[in-house]
Amino acid sequence: NAGVTQTPKFRVLKTGQSMTLLCAQDMNHEYMYWYRQDPGMGLRLIHYSVGEGTTAKGEVPDGYNVSRLKKQNFLLGLESAAPSQTSVYFCASESGALAKNIQYFGAGTRLSVL
Amino acid sequence: GQQLNQSPQSMFIQEGEDVSMNCTSSSIFNTWLWYKQDPGEGPVLLIALYKAGELTSNGRLTAQFGITRKDSFLNISASIPSDVGIYFCAGRAGSYQLTFGKGTKLSVIP
Image (cartoon, rainbow over all chains, first blue to last red; front, side, top):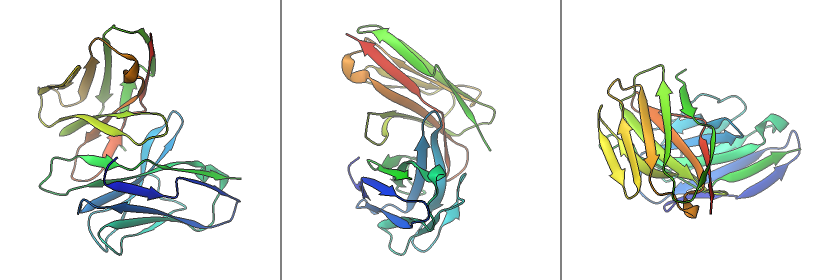
């Protein structure tokens, strides 16, 4: 997981609270991704970014917002947390068009919404 | 959206045995990746495959990109206790998004 750092590692929220998850990468990668992992579901893409200032929706974007103001950071926001958002969240980064499609993952943020 | 079927869902094997798992898709992919996830950690890339028919090894691991471009398999030879974890396949059809399988949970009995 070298190079991709996620904070915080754990968080417990009450329904309706908001929070921001931070992902930072020091590999000068162009592409960054946010996934959620639920038991038996594998990883599902929430949002992604192909460059500073750009974001796009993935497979399960509802209830989340993202921002990529700096190339090295990709923020995932929950405006009003719901119990259905209890999950493990992973950030990944990837070099870009000339690289061979390798995504590097952070260690994850474990979020519980009560 | 695209879906990957990964099998088996879980495996219990004796140390020293060989392991085989596979992924199939209803769509064509131009890249197949295999990741391993240890408990409490993020996925780590094991093997990347970029063209149909490609066979690639990484130590005791061997993976192949199916010639139809709709499947891939991963073999682990002579399993050891540290092989325990969840193995994910992932496929890419376009430029950005990866589609992940649901994982194969491997348990190794010493």
